[in-house]
Image 1 (cartoon, helix red, strand yellow):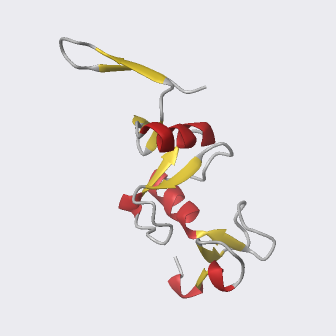
Image 2 (spheres, rainbow, N blue to C red):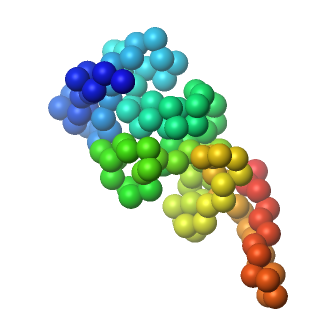
Length: 117
């Protein structure tokens, strides 16, 4: 990744994200820039994001794009639920859901989840 091309978009528009020039990317804006956290997430999961997947910064700092701080939710609804509940479940490597509801076994304490819709 060419970090010399990273720009802080607060200098251009009212947005808190870091962007990188990558005009060939499907998520590029009209000027050819992509949010850096999208590129980091795609590198982490080894593929492009699906249309309904959503990237989340664990520490809520939109400038901290280290791979350890980035996770991908299966849907935007899962991402929103996570902000409300704080509950996330990894359903495949580096892909998470935030279940609508879950129950815990009173004996073994194992949690059983109903996946988001």
